[in-house]
Image (cartoon, rainbow over all chains, first blue to last red; front, side, top):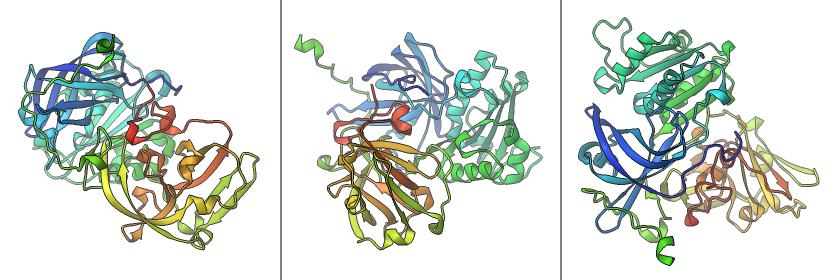
Amino acid sequence: MARGEVRALSGWRTSEVVGVRAETATARTLSLRVPDWPGSLAGQHVDVRLTAPDGYQAVRSYSLASPALAPADEVVVEIGVELLDDGEVSPFLVEEVRPGDVLEVTGPLGGWFTWDPDRDGGPVQLVGGGSGVVPLLSVVRTHAALGSPVPLRLLQSTRTPAAAMYRDELEQRAGQDSGFALTEVWTREAPPGDPRPPGRLDAALLAAATVPAAQRPTCYVCGPTPFVEVVADLLVAAGHPAARVRTERFGG
Amino acid sequence: MDDEQRPAPSPVTRGFTGRRRAPAAALPPGQYVTEEFPVLSAGPTPRVEQDDWRFSVTTETGSSHHWDWNGLHALPRERVEVDLHCVTRWSKFGTHWSGYSLDTLLERVETTAAYAMVHSYGGYTTNLPVADLRGGRAWIVDGYDGRPLDPVHGGPARLLVPHLYLWKSAKWVSGITLSHTEELGFWERAGYHPAGDPWREERYAL
């Protein structure tokens, strides 16, 4: 990518929380109204800054769930936030924040874990673990908004149905869009009637539920570090060139 | 005019109090302290065996110096305790590493080059001034916390340049190319700052 094609916004912009939606018991989607948006690609993130009354500040990065957005004087973007044990910022964003609150945003950020159909061409394979689905939803929404003809598959691994973020939307989109295929893997508890007993992703399931290496997809893997390590290794073992496997690791 | 140029104060976020766990003097602006050791890599973790590991320094004239695993371990070994600062905003204090100073590795390398491009197994690159590799501030490390360095953290050996953001401390390091001209590495081409000094908060190329 040419340098400067994906630009960070210079400076922090005051942003109002305009929507709070519960996705699971521990995850929220926040809608933020952000001024001076320079445009964003699917898969990017923003930095969010909170300021306490005494001036103390804390900053964290959150993935955009929104599809790619054109430059605009003002946009509403969605970020997905999951509560982290012992977190400093996520407990506030998940349990405390409400519409009308103000915080600051800079971004969009990230120039690698992004899907740009003009640049990346060819089929797309997404593999998500838990809340790693957030930037992948951005890709799915972008694919739908563009009416993109390239095949898109998402293999999403989640502990239990109760912990699944964006499940209804993903299943609905998979049902409507013949270019998008969704496979859900449940590691601890499967929904009633699911043909596969709960268990972790393995090579056989990956082979059955992903775009074959011969079709040269660009792969995007996002989730907790151990999950990403395992999946990236499986993809390389299945013949995907390492340079076509893009990863984003959440947490420690 | 001065008033217009001064940034507006940040609005207070209702209900947010936060924690103040870090001694402020040791924490660069915009960072928070973690006890964990998060992993951030752009792609799969390369697996490199010690027997296959090679490290090279190539100068601006094209001459090159090579070390294999045994050659590296014939050099004087150093132990260092340093703080780490990642551009994704976590900092980790008091980490223990062991390895080989770049001062030692560059001792016999004849060069007047100002810029270095660091290469890794797996194709990663990052750029920095040669000056940042000298003066007891940069190492090739293969030990972390008294143990061999885990592949997810860059083993068998990585660069360690703790006074810059951690993306400059290339994991799975394979070589350094010296040059009179500055070129940009992997993240630097993707919008990150060419220098990456955490104390100046050089995160992004704006």
